[in-house]
Each structure stands twice: as structure tokens, then as C-alpha cells.
Length: 316
Image (cartoon, rainbow, N blue to C red; front, side, top):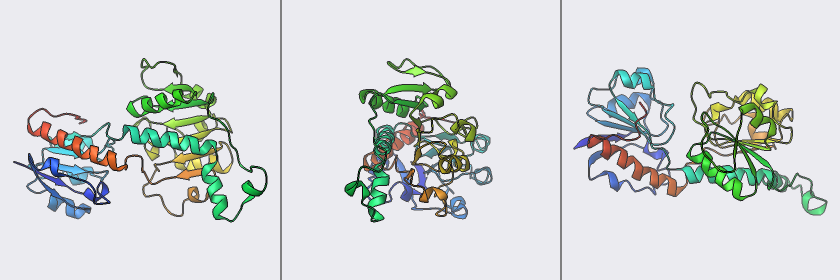
């Protein structure tokens, strides 16, 4: 039986409600809540499969992995935390778990859009500040319908397509920027520049790569309408955070909703925390209880397929 070590299971099982029993029939699993860099090398000894959840595995670390390690499985969709070249040099296969949180992340993106359209977060902030002007006077904040508004979707993968489906059902016009044009009914594929200029909301659903890092910088933000909002539930570094802060502080755009940040956890001194035109959440898009349990089931399929000699979801 192959040996599997989960180096930081608490990242996934932070509420102790996850069931890992599906793994026990075909692999011997050792789980650690967290692992420091020094602890990792000790814990991968005599292990065949290493599982991580957004845990950085750099070149220096992977190069010291024992020859027993055959597979690194990222317990999630993004795998930019793993040095792929180092894994290749050690002949270690790398796989990920795509699709487990598609509905949850799409739901969050739509939730952000609806909240921004009604200034919901700002209204709650005003109440906590004992400012009841929205109740005692005329409405003091923007409030508008999203029907017939334009949504720009960057990335038309599974999550992007789920967002598109919901947006169309809400009566929105949808523009899409993607590396390739896909047959999606009732949407228009455009350049990034056109999407930014025409959209009332821009939502990001592409992976973080060398090509997409800081894809949205101050020059791109200046292309957007001053009344528009940007939503990021993908990876923080797709937006250049310092440029976004500048754009928000100068009202170059109307606001932002960010489930991901360029550095996580976000520094508590970040200006983003005090901006009234910003909604921040701590990377919760993939953390629904249903999504996390689904992830464990799919993780098991990855490991079982690899053990059986038919690896799936290979990204290396």
C-alpha cells in the first residue's frame, strides 16, 4: 500500500467536519494540521504521495525530497505554489483537483455583484458607525438594477461559464475575454481592452500564470468606467494591488470586491481594509463545506488513479 502524507490538512479541515475515510482503503494516510518548511522534509520521508493545500513547495525544498516521492497532489485548482521544474527534475508527477468549487466560487462572484449594486456592505458599515441617514433621510448610497448592465468575464473556464449562465438569467449583457473563443450562446468575445471599456462589472476567472500576473494594472484600470466595479475570486496577483489601491482612492473606478489578495493573509495595515468602496473576504470561495468535502472525494480519485497507473488531472 502506498504511503500518503497530507502536510497541512487544517487548511482544508479547519472546522474538523471533513471525512477522509474514502482514502483509507487504498493508501495509508498521515495527516498533519500544519507543517513548517523544516518539518516538511522530515514528514515526506518514506512517503510516496505528498498532498498540500496552497502550501509553498519551492525548488530548494522539492530538490531535497526523497526518491520515494512519486506524486505531489495539490488539494485545489491552482498549483502556482509548487515549483513545477523542480518536480520534473525529480521525476515527480504533479496533479491538481479542478472543478470541486466551481459552483461555490461562481456563487460568490454573483453575490459580490449583487452586493455592490445595492451598496449593501456600505449600508451595513454606516449602521455600525451609528449613521442612520439611509433610514431617516433619502437613500444616501448608489442602488441600481443589474438587468441590462454589462458584465465582463475574464476567463471562460468552468467557473467563468457558470457565472455567465447566471448573469444571462439575470438579464445582463455579457462580454468575455479568453485565450480561445468558445461556443457560448448569447455572449460576445472581445479584446481585453474592449471588455474593460464597456463593462459595468468585471469579474476575473483565469488562472495565475506568468502571462496573467498583474494583467490588471493602473493602465488597464484607467480603461474602465468610473462607475464600474472589479471582482476577483481567482488569484490576487492577477491584479496589481498597489495600482488597484490607487485607482480606488482616486475614484478611477467605483469599487472592488476581492476574495483573493496579492499576499495572503492580507497585511492588516493594508489600506484596502479601510476603504468604503471595497468588499474583502479571506479567500472563502472554495471553503463551502460541500466544496471541501467534494474536494476530498476528488482527491481520493486522483490518488487512486495514480496508484492504479492511470493518473488524472496531471499538470506537470
